[in-house]
Image 1: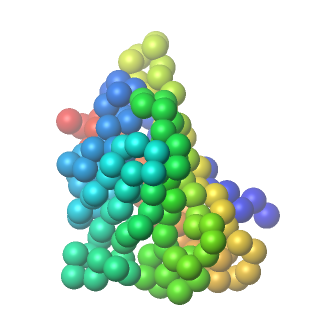
Image 2: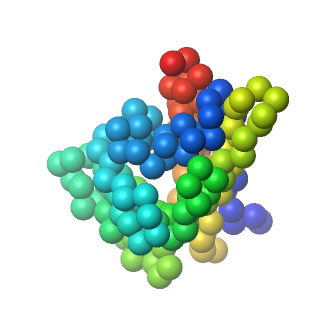
Image 3: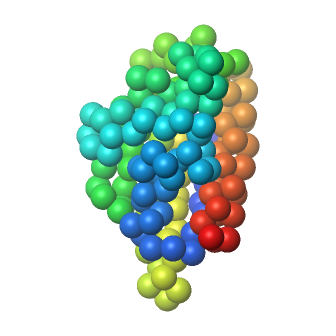
Length: 150
């Protein structure tokens, strides 16, 4: 069984704007998190918060950017939602998200590939992977609607 989540989405905007939807706090807060605290540099924070009243559990608190090539590539650590926190958030290493931004010069759009890896093999991990598969799919669909309708 493939232990990697891979989703694609086409955004009708520049490569730079697509990249900024993942790296600018105000943009992340439009489509992915209630609060974002991102420092777009290697070692910088990639902290997203979905519940400000429970920010230590329902967040990516402590996650860091592991690689960045402005407008082309972004890689960061990822933590689990509250129901998976007891095993995902203490794993070493944490799961990992890679986002690639590929321009399409034909129509000035950007193809985004999101790959979420680092899944382990037991049934708890498989349950979390299936959950995140749907969550990422829905989040990227929402991102597409935010960008393509603006």
